[in-house]
Length: 181
Image (tube, rainbow, N blue to C red; front, side, top):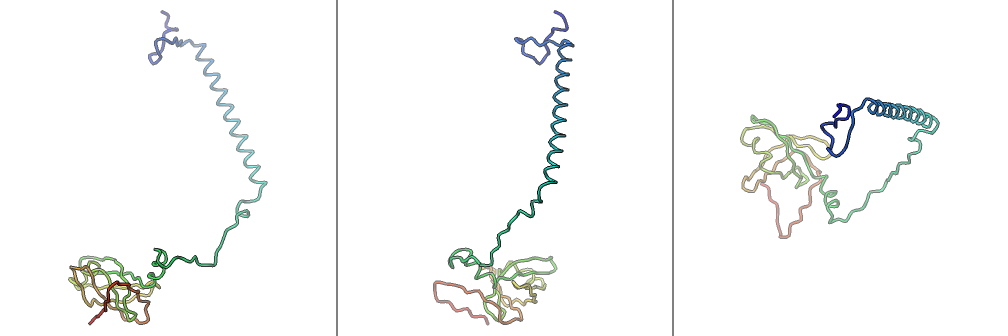
């Protein structure tokens, strides 16, 4: 068998794949034509696109934004309705102690500065004589004082020197009176 007609090692034995130099030159010639054609098509497309873009108006002038001045009314018992009512009374609590710093949240339970939070939020401050800062929803900051904490219920009450705060309305099914001494 002539080396020019030996099938390639990757070809199927039933298919005769010749490696003649004539065939490879024809294949290379066809490949070069496709590359040249693709290059010309790319250049023509790029030039045509740039000409079209320079003639048309910028797209930003064609954009019409919708604006709304009305607030969407939500059902009072929906998650969005409840969140809208509770959000003004939510506070952020930052702690600093010998063990490091931490953050947590709480909410105003009385308009004269009483805040309910979790015990784990203030525990390092309580046990390591640290400090805590309360940031109201409007961005005002106050130094907080821990009035009491219960690790079994993971609750704590802190106090800031502020009045007129929006207190969260707690809806409890049984009669309950919050007494802080």
